[in-house]
Image (cartoon, rainbow, N blue to C red):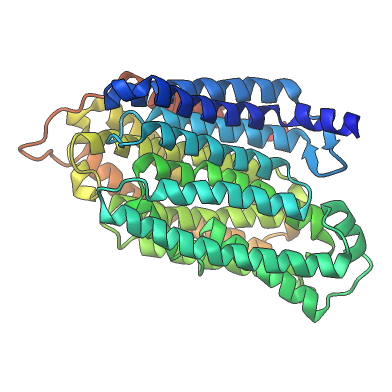
Length: 488
């Protein structure tokens, strides 16, 4: 037993560092920060938070893949290490723009909540049993609910938090009920043992109910249609760094967890989706969620004049493409799914970072607020150009290769004439629709003239460094996609 605990403590070194960093942030603010200005307290909290995340990243990479841990509860394989590193990088990008956003009255608590949410994300990446999966999801979700409603000066923030919390509570109930049914049918909470037991069982009505419950909960967490209604309000009302964290790191960790759950635990009841007619299973449900998300997300985004709501519906469309990657991951492996989720997270975090800097100097909610950004701040305009073109899937940026890898994996499942192939062709066609509304953003930022009273925007040094790093990652991962794809 002592050996097991020693192995566990070694495996969760990054999480331990983050928890200690959160406590350190709160302690320093309590002891030293009360006599300082709000800006100084925020800078100190962010500095300690960045140091904690960098330490967790270095130690996590040093631990590396070690296999199953603590009786099979954790699995530290190359995917878990990659997802952990990706999550920590996205959290660093989020922390980098916190000081540029409008200041909060409790900066230490805000940074501590970001670190605690990150602990949940890291656990999601390595969870290998139902109980740990549920606890990690809820640990991250509880912190995100508070982060979404952290701006007490705006009613929209309270509305965002309330809707996010209510929908999250419903999805938690669905997830726990589905997990309880799976445990009752298999007698185990370990993914591997669940798969072994289900391999000897036929699809039963109770198992079908369990699968639907789990997938409904996953749809809520991923903001997939028709379970997406919380996303536009949460993206619009949450503080900008909070929205960046919800849109980037939580998606990467969430898809990693459900890839493990669906393929490692529920793989025997996936069904057949490469021929007509297919055998029943969860693949067909995921395909329907993917198609609905891509259709609704892309066409609803066309009608948006609010930048954040546009990015929210864009996120719904990207969730559909990620579901396509999840669907084909059983054939191609998790590489394309991880690459897409990671590069999408970097681009989205960067786009919200630009909005955070703009918000400090005036309005940044409507498309018209972006007018003349190239004159007000060439750095912000250039960064936004890279992020938006990556989201649109324009080569040679990382977003193009993410979409290419996912669509190619779907086509390889059963060819163009298979249901997976039709879904991939739908995703390719809808990419043209997405290009239109992304160009609306760039038209305002790069072509439209600024308002008469628009002042130049001064970008803080940390925010400028963060945007530069994010843009560089988008370019480098686009030029060298094999740096990630070949590792998984």
